[in-house]
Image (cartoon, rainbow, N blue to C red; front, side, top):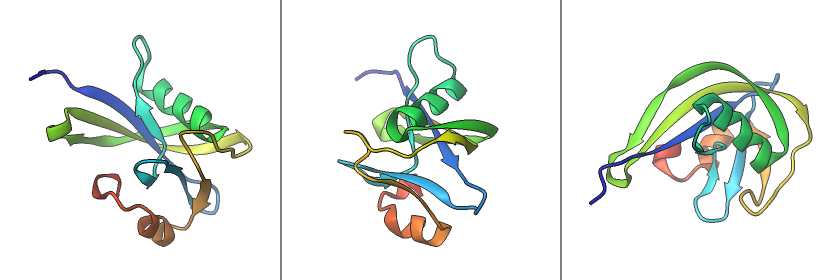
Amino acid sequence: MDNYYKITSGVLVMNEKREILLKEDPVRGWELPGGVVEPYESMKDAAIREVEEEMGIHIEILKFCGISDEVDNHIEHMWWLGKPVYGSLKTNRESLNVGFFQTEKALKLIKMNNFK
């Protein structure tokens, strides 16, 4: 059994209406944007890159929110709070749908408890 952990960096992006940005992953369903931190990349830069790649917009990181883990899957998640700066939402193979949602709606869309 491997003794290493994957490090991911995810971000809760909130717009001026206090809506939350979500993407619909083809496997996991609706979730916050994020992904694996690449070699020689900071965790903050990974979060910014993942939002741009998965959703087409540029964000600004406002602050670090915390860490969560999936011990059984050997994954550590770093979480950030961000805001959109510019760009237009788009979809791709990793994000079938994207959009901003009120908190109550976002919590209903997200089915995986570790993403809530």
